[in-house]
Image 1 (cartoon, rainbow, N blue to C red):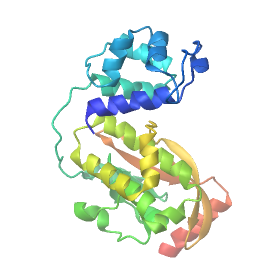
Image 2 (cartoon, helix red, strand yellow):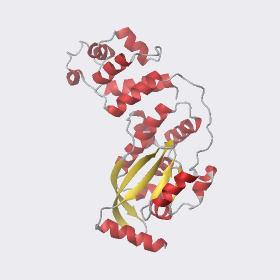
Image 3 (cartoon, rainbow, N blue to C red):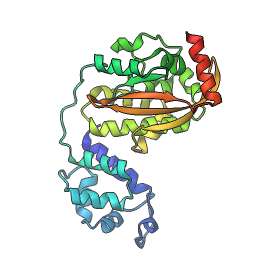
Image 4 (cartoon, one colour):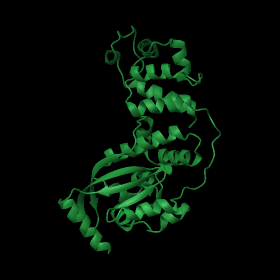
Length: 281
Protein backbone atom coordinates (compact mmCIF):
# COMPACT_ATOMS: atom_id res chain seq x y z
CA UNK A 1 0.00 0.00 0.00
CA UNK A 2 1.32 3.46 -0.91
CA UNK A 3 2.46 5.68 1.94
CA UNK A 4 -0.26 8.24 1.23
CA UNK A 5 -2.94 5.54 1.38
CA UNK A 6 -1.51 4.13 4.62
CA UNK A 7 -1.45 7.58 6.18
CA UNK A 8 -5.00 8.32 5.04
CA UNK A 9 -6.42 5.07 6.38
CA UNK A 10 -4.48 5.33 9.65
CA UNK A 11 -5.80 8.84 10.35
CA UNK A 12 -9.36 7.85 9.46
CA UNK A 13 -9.24 4.73 11.64
CA UNK A 14 -7.89 6.62 14.63
CA UNK A 15 -10.35 9.47 14.15
CA UNK A 16 -13.24 7.00 14.01
CA UNK A 17 -12.49 5.55 17.44
CA UNK A 18 -12.91 8.92 19.25
CA UNK A 19 -16.04 10.84 20.16
CA UNK A 20 -16.24 14.63 20.64
CA UNK A 21 -16.65 14.21 24.40
CA UNK A 22 -13.43 12.14 24.48
CA UNK A 23 -11.42 15.18 23.41
CA UNK A 24 -13.43 17.89 25.14
CA UNK A 25 -15.19 19.56 22.22
CA UNK A 26 -18.83 20.38 21.69
CA UNK A 27 -20.22 18.13 18.91
CA UNK A 28 -20.95 19.95 15.71
CA UNK A 29 -24.67 20.18 14.90
CA UNK A 30 -26.31 17.94 12.34
CA UNK A 31 -26.65 14.21 11.85
CA UNK A 32 -23.38 12.32 12.11
CA UNK A 33 -23.03 10.08 9.06
CA UNK A 34 -19.90 8.30 10.30
CA UNK A 35 -18.64 7.16 13.67
CA UNK A 36 -16.06 9.17 15.53
CA UNK A 37 -14.74 12.70 15.26
CA UNK A 38 -15.43 14.81 12.23
CA UNK A 39 -12.45 16.30 10.44
CA UNK A 40 -13.50 19.75 11.61
CA UNK A 41 -13.53 18.64 15.24
CA UNK A 42 -10.13 16.99 15.04
CA UNK A 43 -8.64 20.03 13.31
CA UNK A 44 -10.03 22.21 16.08
CA UNK A 45 -8.44 20.11 18.83
CA UNK A 46 -5.11 19.85 17.00
CA UNK A 47 -5.01 23.56 16.18
CA UNK A 48 -4.67 23.16 12.41
CA UNK A 49 -6.89 24.38 9.62
CA UNK A 50 -9.62 22.07 8.37
CA UNK A 51 -8.41 22.41 4.79
CA UNK A 52 -4.85 21.45 5.74
CA UNK A 53 -5.95 18.42 7.73
CA UNK A 54 -8.25 17.33 4.92
CA UNK A 55 -5.39 17.48 2.42
CA UNK A 56 -3.19 15.51 4.80
CA UNK A 57 -5.80 12.81 5.34
CA UNK A 58 -6.45 12.57 1.61
CA UNK A 59 -2.76 12.16 0.85
CA UNK A 60 -2.52 15.50 -0.93
CA UNK A 61 -0.09 17.13 1.49
CA UNK A 62 3.46 15.95 2.22
CA UNK A 63 6.26 16.95 4.56
CA UNK A 64 4.06 17.87 7.52
CA UNK A 65 6.11 19.45 10.29
CA UNK A 66 6.91 17.52 13.43
CA UNK A 67 4.92 20.07 15.41
CA UNK A 68 1.78 19.44 13.37
CA UNK A 69 2.21 15.68 13.60
CA UNK A 70 2.71 15.86 17.37
CA UNK A 71 -0.41 18.01 17.69
CA UNK A 72 -2.42 15.50 15.67
CA UNK A 73 -1.01 12.60 17.66
CA UNK A 74 -2.01 14.27 20.91
CA UNK A 75 -5.48 15.12 19.60
CA UNK A 76 -5.98 11.53 18.44
CA UNK A 77 -4.80 10.15 21.80
CA UNK A 78 -2.11 8.04 20.13
CA UNK A 79 0.20 5.95 22.26
CA UNK A 80 3.97 6.02 21.75
CA UNK A 81 3.94 3.30 19.10
CA UNK A 82 1.11 4.89 17.12
CA UNK A 83 2.77 8.28 17.40
CA UNK A 84 5.99 6.91 15.94
CA UNK A 85 4.02 5.19 13.18
CA UNK A 86 2.31 8.48 12.28
CA UNK A 87 5.66 10.25 11.99
CA UNK A 88 7.05 7.47 9.80
CA UNK A 89 4.07 7.49 7.44
CA UNK A 90 4.03 11.28 7.10
CA UNK A 91 7.78 11.83 6.88
CA UNK A 92 8.98 9.13 4.47
CA UNK A 93 9.23 9.93 0.80
CA UNK A 94 7.55 7.42 -1.52
CA UNK A 95 9.89 5.00 -3.28
CA UNK A 96 9.18 2.46 -6.02
CA UNK A 97 8.05 -0.91 -4.75
CA UNK A 98 10.76 -3.54 -5.10
CA UNK A 99 11.31 -7.18 -4.25
CA UNK A 100 14.18 -7.27 -1.74
CA UNK A 101 16.63 -10.17 -1.59
CA UNK A 102 15.70 -13.10 0.59
CA UNK A 103 16.56 -12.63 4.25
CA UNK A 104 18.94 -14.98 5.98
CA UNK A 105 20.38 -15.49 9.44
CA UNK A 106 24.12 -14.88 9.25
CA UNK A 107 26.75 -16.95 11.03
CA UNK A 108 26.91 -14.68 14.08
CA UNK A 109 23.14 -14.79 14.48
CA UNK A 110 23.20 -18.58 14.28
CA UNK A 111 25.90 -18.57 16.97
CA UNK A 112 23.56 -16.44 19.08
CA UNK A 113 20.74 -18.93 18.48
CA UNK A 114 22.93 -21.84 19.60
CA UNK A 115 24.01 -19.95 22.71
CA UNK A 116 20.44 -19.73 23.99
CA UNK A 117 20.86 -23.24 25.37
CA UNK A 118 17.86 -25.34 26.36
CA UNK A 119 15.15 -22.75 25.68
CA UNK A 120 13.11 -22.89 22.47
CA UNK A 121 14.35 -20.09 20.23
CA UNK A 122 14.00 -18.96 16.63
CA UNK A 123 15.13 -16.12 14.37
CA UNK A 124 12.39 -14.19 12.60
CA UNK A 125 12.68 -11.88 9.61
CA UNK A 126 10.72 -8.66 9.36
CA UNK A 127 7.81 -10.41 7.57
CA UNK A 128 7.69 -13.14 10.28
CA UNK A 129 9.54 -15.64 8.09
CA UNK A 130 11.34 -18.26 10.19
CA UNK A 131 15.01 -17.85 9.24
CA UNK A 132 16.31 -20.40 11.73
CA UNK A 133 15.13 -22.31 14.80
CA UNK A 134 16.51 -24.75 17.29
CA UNK A 135 15.04 -28.27 17.61
CA UNK A 136 12.94 -27.45 20.67
CA UNK A 137 11.35 -24.36 19.07
CA UNK A 138 10.50 -26.45 16.02
CA UNK A 139 8.94 -29.18 18.17
CA UNK A 140 7.02 -26.71 20.31
CA UNK A 141 5.64 -24.38 17.65
CA UNK A 142 5.60 -26.28 14.36
CA UNK A 143 6.48 -29.92 14.72
CA UNK A 144 4.30 -30.76 11.70
CA UNK A 145 6.56 -28.64 9.43
CA UNK A 146 9.80 -29.89 7.87
CA UNK A 147 12.51 -28.93 10.36
CA UNK A 148 14.92 -27.99 7.55
CA UNK A 149 12.45 -25.67 5.78
CA UNK A 150 13.92 -22.38 7.15
CA UNK A 151 17.10 -23.09 5.18
CA UNK A 152 15.19 -22.88 1.89
CA UNK A 153 13.76 -19.40 1.19
CA UNK A 154 11.00 -20.77 -1.05
CA UNK A 155 9.79 -23.19 1.65
CA UNK A 156 10.25 -21.13 4.79
CA UNK A 157 7.45 -21.18 7.34
CA UNK A 158 5.87 -17.79 7.92
CA UNK A 159 4.39 -17.37 11.39
CA UNK A 160 1.71 -14.89 10.32
CA UNK A 161 0.58 -17.13 7.48
CA UNK A 162 0.56 -20.17 9.75
CA UNK A 163 -1.35 -18.39 12.50
CA UNK A 164 -4.20 -17.49 10.15
CA UNK A 165 -4.16 -20.30 7.58
CA UNK A 166 -2.55 -23.39 9.12
CA UNK A 167 -4.98 -25.56 11.15
CA UNK A 168 -2.23 -26.93 13.43
CA UNK A 169 -1.00 -23.47 14.43
CA UNK A 170 -4.54 -22.15 14.84
CA UNK A 171 -5.21 -24.92 17.37
CA UNK A 172 -1.92 -24.41 19.20
CA UNK A 173 -2.81 -21.02 20.71
CA UNK A 174 -5.63 -21.22 23.24
CA UNK A 175 -6.06 -17.43 23.06
CA UNK A 176 -5.66 -16.87 19.34
CA UNK A 177 -7.32 -13.45 19.46
CA UNK A 178 -4.53 -11.94 21.54
CA UNK A 179 -1.81 -13.59 19.49
CA UNK A 180 -3.31 -12.50 16.16
CA UNK A 181 -3.69 -8.91 17.36
CA UNK A 182 -0.03 -8.87 18.36
CA UNK A 183 1.18 -10.27 15.05
CA UNK A 184 -0.96 -7.97 12.91
CA UNK A 185 -0.04 -4.93 15.00
CA UNK A 186 3.62 -5.67 14.43
CA UNK A 187 3.13 -6.26 10.69
CA UNK A 188 1.35 -2.91 10.47
CA UNK A 189 4.36 -1.25 12.12
CA UNK A 190 6.76 -2.95 9.70
CA UNK A 191 4.63 -1.93 6.71
CA UNK A 192 4.96 1.70 7.77
CA UNK A 193 8.73 1.36 7.90
CA UNK A 194 9.04 -0.57 4.64
CA UNK A 195 6.22 0.52 2.30
CA UNK A 196 8.35 -0.38 -0.70
CA UNK A 197 8.67 -4.06 0.33
CA UNK A 198 6.84 -5.99 -2.40
CA UNK A 199 7.13 -9.30 -0.53
CA UNK A 200 5.49 -7.81 2.55
CA UNK A 201 2.73 -6.31 0.40
CA UNK A 202 2.20 -9.72 -1.20
CA UNK A 203 1.90 -11.39 2.20
CA UNK A 204 -0.63 -8.83 3.41
CA UNK A 205 -2.62 -9.20 0.19
CA UNK A 206 -2.64 -12.99 0.44
CA UNK A 207 -3.78 -13.00 4.06
CA UNK A 208 -6.42 -10.33 3.40
CA UNK A 209 -7.88 -12.43 0.59
CA UNK A 210 -7.77 -15.78 2.40
CA UNK A 211 -8.66 -14.73 5.96
CA UNK A 212 -11.52 -12.39 6.85
CA UNK A 213 -10.13 -12.39 10.39
CA UNK A 214 -6.82 -10.96 9.18
CA UNK A 215 -8.60 -8.44 6.93
CA UNK A 216 -10.63 -7.11 9.86
CA UNK A 217 -7.57 -6.77 12.10
CA UNK A 218 -5.55 -5.13 9.33
CA UNK A 219 -8.27 -2.54 8.67
CA UNK A 220 -8.21 -1.56 12.36
CA UNK A 221 -4.67 -0.12 11.88
CA UNK A 222 -3.49 -1.26 15.28
CA UNK A 223 0.24 -0.58 15.64
CA UNK A 224 2.22 -2.43 18.30
CA UNK A 225 5.60 -4.17 18.27
CA UNK A 226 5.75 -7.76 19.46
CA UNK A 227 7.91 -7.57 22.56
CA UNK A 228 6.92 -10.03 25.30
CA UNK A 229 3.71 -11.79 26.23
CA UNK A 230 2.47 -15.01 27.82
CA UNK A 231 0.35 -17.53 25.94
CA UNK A 232 -1.40 -20.75 26.83
CA UNK A 233 -0.44 -23.43 24.30
CA UNK A 234 -2.29 -26.67 23.63
CA UNK A 235 0.45 -28.88 22.29
CA UNK A 236 -0.62 -32.03 20.44
CA UNK A 237 2.06 -34.21 22.11
CA UNK A 238 2.49 -32.94 25.67
CA UNK A 239 -0.71 -31.02 26.41
CA UNK A 240 -1.17 -27.55 27.85
CA UNK A 241 1.61 -25.24 28.98
CA UNK A 242 1.93 -21.51 29.51
CA UNK A 243 4.95 -19.88 27.90
CA UNK A 244 6.35 -16.38 27.58
CA UNK A 245 7.55 -15.36 24.13
CA UNK A 246 10.12 -12.56 24.15
CA UNK A 247 11.32 -10.93 20.93
CA UNK A 248 14.82 -9.49 21.16
CA UNK A 249 16.12 -7.18 18.43
CA UNK A 250 19.34 -8.28 16.75
CA UNK A 251 21.69 -5.30 16.65
CA UNK A 252 23.50 -6.29 13.43
CA UNK A 253 20.21 -7.00 11.64
CA UNK A 254 17.62 -4.56 13.03
CA UNK A 255 14.80 -6.02 10.94
CA UNK A 256 15.35 -9.45 12.48
CA UNK A 257 14.55 -10.64 15.99
CA UNK A 258 15.45 -13.53 18.23
CA UNK A 259 12.34 -15.03 19.81
CA UNK A 260 13.04 -16.90 23.04
CA UNK A 261 10.35 -19.01 24.72
CA UNK A 262 10.50 -19.47 28.49
CA UNK A 263 8.39 -20.96 31.26
CA UNK A 264 8.07 -20.03 34.91
CA UNK A 265 10.71 -21.76 37.00
CA UNK A 266 9.35 -24.71 38.93
CA UNK A 267 5.96 -24.59 37.22
CA UNK A 268 3.99 -27.43 35.66
CA UNK A 269 4.61 -25.72 32.31
CA UNK A 270 8.36 -26.05 32.87
CA UNK A 271 7.83 -29.77 33.52
CA UNK A 272 5.76 -30.05 30.34
CA UNK A 273 8.44 -28.35 28.29
CA UNK A 274 11.03 -30.69 29.78
CA UNK A 275 8.83 -33.60 28.72
CA UNK A 276 8.84 -32.30 25.17
CA UNK A 277 12.62 -31.87 25.33
CA UNK A 278 12.96 -35.49 26.44
CA UNK A 279 10.58 -36.64 23.73
CA UNK A 280 12.54 -35.06 20.87
CA UNK A 281 15.88 -36.21 22.31
